Length: 231
Image 1 (cartoon, rainbow, N blue to C red):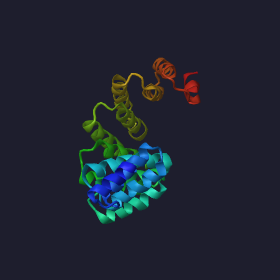
Image 2 (cartoon, rainbow, N blue to C red; image 1 turned 90 degrees about the horizontal axis):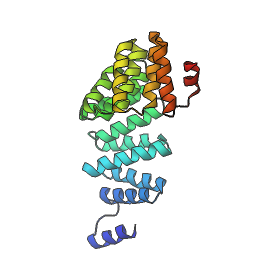
Image 3 (cartoon, rainbow, N blue to C red; image 1 turned 45 degrees about the horizontal axis):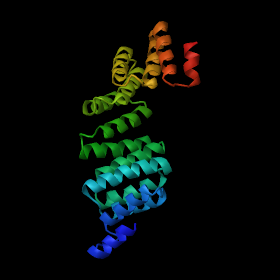
Image 4 (cartoon, rainbow, N blue to C red; image 1 turned 180 degrees about the horizontal axis):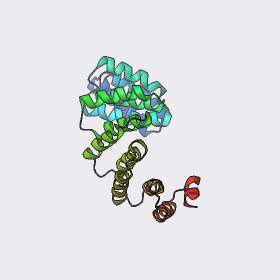
């Protein structure tokens, strides 16, 4: 912090410029002063921070809000979007805030806007898929597939698609295929084994159920229902 103040004194930079408030926020984050970090990073976006620094500010705020709570984030992103209607990161993060509050329709609208501005970010499709799934809509599978196309090595996306295929469309074989791929990508995924066992229960294959649940337990799964299902 002292270095930043000395730097501003030498360069004559406005201490409340987007760049300086961003650096202040990052410094407070590194010091573990999370509330102060949020305040300064929010100020940096309000001050018109742009480019790579804005993208980093959005990512850091996403992590901080997830830790501290999303309530204040909506107001911040409202202001950022009013200032710059092309601010994709603000639409996405406001969508995450709405999702956290269970306001899935509002979240989907914001994820729609983020995708409209930038259609090659897997996170946007993944988040929209989760919100759509919460509302019980079948288009969740399409969004998970779009996310997989952009990030084909992320095993969690295949688990999400399997869940949508199984619960919303009743396509058990497709769910198994997605879970097989999830396990190939991440053999340590207890979630993938546990969920594949659920699909095998629906298919009436008890030996596969026992095998997958046992593996899930070996990998650290501890949910009571897993032991009940295996029994």
